[in-house]
Amino acid sequence: WEGDAFELTCEAIGKPQPVMVTWVRVDDEMPQHAVLSGPNLFINNLNKTDNGTYRCEASNIVGKAHSDYMLYVYDSRAGEEGSIRAVDHAVIGGVVAGGGVRHAVLAHHSGPLL
Image (cartoon, rainbow, N blue to C red; front, side, top):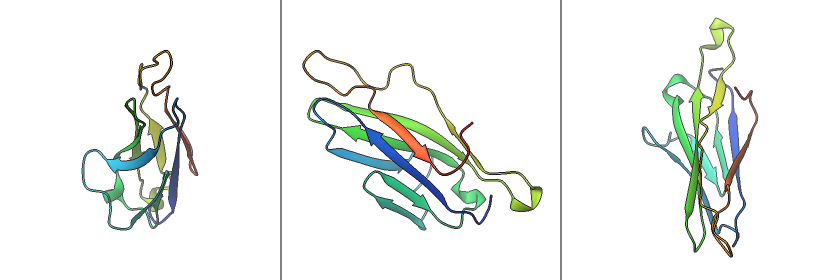
């Protein structure tokens, strides 16, 4: 809902372990009121301008992987909850014998997952 707080945590698994995990906004600039702290993305006081696609990116010395999440913020007066939708990817990262980024991105969030 508009006015609520929102949190996403990106967990990356790989061999070797990813050393860089970050969030970017795909379709616009990151909101000024967003707080990035390592693998965590916090957005306080959600509003409809926060709607968009947010990407978790993970990398190690072998390669990079990412996963996209679409955020929809609804008017709190409409009585509908804001939601986040995971965009499925058939292959997020390559698995290479002896190394590579393995299905590197999972996310946890504080709202409903559709």
